Image (cartoon, rainbow, N blue to C red; front, side, top):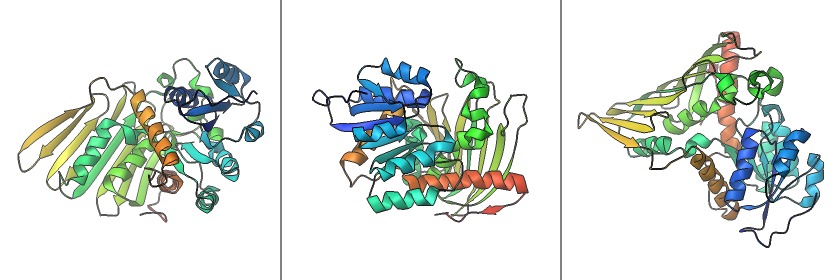
Length: 346
């Protein structure tokens, strides 16, 4: 590995990316696009490392331990779910700021230790949930904060897409999404819906769920789940996620005492119904908006957190732990046919 000069860089920060699957590659490309700093990468597969080395100004290492001599400032954890905490802890122990791809982990073991270490060392952390940077959901959040529909009484989020269509150029059966041993399953994979419904409607105190492997997909984890949530404010929530639907679906509906808000990802629109005016108002995505824009905005936010300690991450490790607890409670509820009362609720 040859250490790269930072003279021609916009920043002298050093980013170490662990895991070079689709999301790791996306973050590397975006770091380069933003001229964020020097980039080093690791993946256990030599084929992935070779592909990364074809990118301009990116070097790779053959093991994670080889990276510490390079003294990275920040680490992006993009490995399979079961390695997130292990890799994040190793990075934190080397005083690195952390960007951890969702979900924070596949279990709670090690989570509190990581949070304590981050706080003790005063490290910035961000759990990557890019949907918080989608212009549609940001508009929904804005309307809710303005009280556009009054007190929330119900919230519903849905996601569905046929798993083989997620990454058409690879075998879905080998992906972490389809494998229990890598922390897969639709509940953790689609934790976006759990995260943003909390963000929009507030903290969750109880969870009930039914989930199972119901399709002919070749996977050993659940492919469909329906959750019922009770929010801290008394509102009722529903979250449905699956990797079976042949037509992509991602949408939410928030019902308030004074109106309703609907968001549809595929249509690129937000609809707001005002009880006072008895009419719908429509908001659409900005002209020219592209999917990668929310990933770029996510990284821009992380860079702001790194350069200005006053900037609070939209979802640090502790916040990511709350979403993870809901997901794991949903799994427990389905397995034991129980209503689960959360310990980490807001």
